[in-house]
Image (tube, rainbow, N blue to C red; front, side):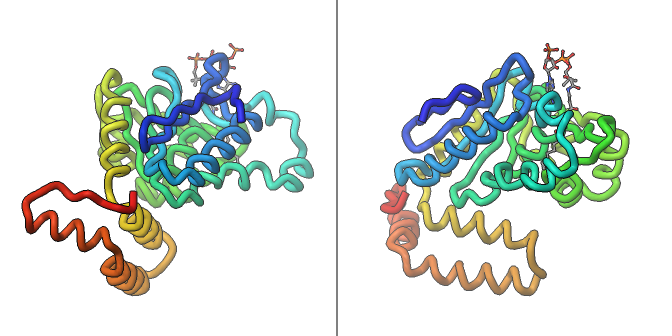
Length: 258
Ligand code: CO8
């Protein structure tokens, strides 16, 4: 498939998707979201890919859903097409890890898209926000839900009710992003993280991701039980034998399933 609103590159076992509507600060329109869904589908189906990166430009990861495309929609339009949830949620259904590399604005749907990824590495110029309230609406793709789980009620209320932006340092302090790096290093650091994940045992990586996500959906007791069972299941893999033998032999592990 050829893409216009995104750039798609494959670097060994890492798939990189770059949002590419510079004229609109990467505002997320339906074409971009269709292409993003197709690119994620393709990387998920590609057995040679072990980790996916979603990024934008130095100025904007994404400044939100495309307001110009959205502004004349009626209630029946958004209700009937279940705007725009199905497309947006593709990233959350990915079984392989997805890292968001965020520089510049990550606002509204852009912040929500970043939060759908497994973790966010932010450049020091990143700015996160849920400004939808200023447009007479509210976040519609997880902003009131994921943001609250990540940064807690006080900050989520502050962000969603005032629409103010959070800089990278505050986002790191609040638990929204895993690391902040200088803008010039963003893609190098993110590539290194993605490559290191892609070099690990794929079943262990996918099960680890599934187990962490389970913690958002179930009780602690059920989550611990799930973790223990899937931990046990990894002892059925050749990669567990290889990983532990390599440690004992003081040599790097050569995982078979990656
Ligand atoms: N949609 C459409 N176009 C946009 C958007 C956007 N979200 N953001 C920026 N643009 C366009 C501007 O209109 C402008 O275009 P033009 O040159 O043709 O006028 C161009 O990008 C550059 O933008 P600015 O001139 O405004 O650049 P500044 O550096 O002055 O300002 C800002 C940057 C602060 C980011 C500013 O552009 C801004 O406030 N943008 C809107 C941010 C916003 O409100 N985002 C939330 C959108 S609503 C949303 O995301 C809801 C998601 C719900 C998902 C629903 C799923 C179910």
